[in-house]
Length: 427
Image (cartoon, rainbow, N blue to C red):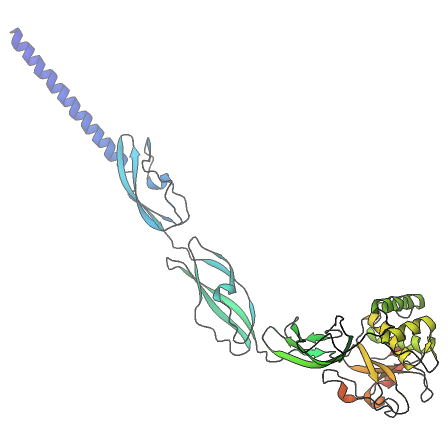
């Protein structure tokens, strides 16, 4: 009886253990199934966004996290990645999809160009942003052969095919006009000295505010006394070019000569001490007062040292006497200091004697004859004389010596010139 009882007891115990084990296994499997069902098998995120573990859960899962090391995943690059999530002692495979559905962004840069000078598409937009490299191109090739106002479309496209169209305003300039060169005149200098080829030269253009200026002095030999051609070129940014050729005459420096800066210092002192003009005056007002002062403060004696203009000016400022060359030279020094373009005019043909006066450019861009010298054959002095004002028997000159760039006034403005008040009415 005892043996049977023990066997029966053993059978009961084994059955209980097996039942418990089966129940435990069933519990574990049930737990895994429940927790696993909370894990989302496939997650899609936009490029550039972080990987967030909670995105893979529909509900909290105890003791869960990434089993896969995700630190090496670059979310700026589209792609699919297999990951493993651990929860407790269990693992679940999932898929992470990184996709790019965001189009690039950018800002239009309005363009002002010349005909047939189409810029690269990449130059027409700025602040371009995308996580991936962006291809920038014109939607259709713009036609910029004609001037006008246009809007051309530029495409921003990333490798995923996302596209943004930018409207770029274009102003197309039809420019075939070369720059204008003003103040070109024949030059004088001394053998072996530096030459200011652009002295008195100004250049303007209808579109380019700073045309390039080039001087071709390849024919000049500064070691000999002679005359040489010098060509001045002006080119705008569209490639339109103008040129003018002048003559440079070199001579041996005379024994008596003064550095121009010495003369300009004398001129500045004369302006300050005699209050010849005020700095806020116009060029016309300044020039009028310069010629008036020279006429009234230099005594005509009929002779002067004409070795060089600097000599004539030095003697004029020092002695306050001389002849027409002295008046010319002193006026030149004062005009130079005032920044007013001017040049020498000589009587031609020479009749009973040489004569010298100034040609002056004023605000209207025209050049006027101005002569401060006293003469028995005319009263007072000349200011702003046009070509038609001149008595060509005493103020005749070689018109051909001044190129077309020197626009000498032809029609009289003397009706607007007041020699008593030193004012010139607007004309």
